[in-house]
Image: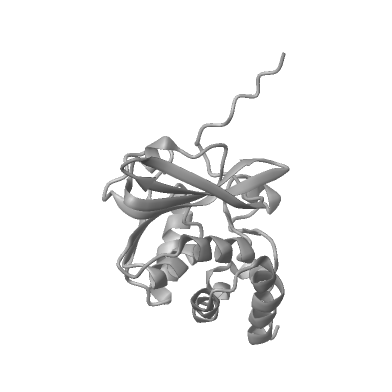
Length: 224
C-alpha cells in the first residue's frame, strides 16, 4: 500500500467532503500518522471510512466500544471543538490513543480515560512511540469513576451515549465545551455543549453513527 497516497485520498475524498476545511486540522492529519495507531492485523484499513476494531472479534469488538472512530468523524469533532493551545482536555474512550494524539497537538495537556486495561497500555505505548508527552492515559471508567484533575476546558467523548452525562458537564470550566455523539441507531447527532455561569447551550450540527461507550445510562425503552 502506498501510505502517502492512501492518506492523501482519505483527506481529500472522505474528510474534506465532510466539511472539514480547517487548514490546521487538515495539516494535523498529515503530521499524526494514523497507521501507527492501528493494530497490525488491520493496517490495511487505516485510511478506510469505517470504525476499526482494536481487539479480536471484529464487529463484536466494535459493539464493545473497542474501536477507532471513522477518520471523518474524528476530524470533524476536532475541527468543531476549536481547541486552543492553552487548554486542558479530558477524553473519554482512549482506544489506541490516536484521537488523544490529535488533541495533544492542539492543546496544552490531555487526560484520557480508557476502561480496558490492555487498550490503555496500547495507547500509552503508541503515544510514547509518537513522541507525545502531554497526554496522561488513565485506566478508568469514565461513566463511573471519580475523575481527578478538573475542571477542564474541553471534554470529548470518543464514542456514543444515549444522553449527555450531567456529571461530565459539571467538570467543565466556565466557557468550556463538551462534545459527544448522542442518540440511538439508526441516527445519532454530534452534540456540542457550551458551559457558562448562566447555563448550558447546545447545538447538534451534524448526524453520524458511533460505537457505544460502556456503562453510561441508556434511555428508557418502555412501551405501552
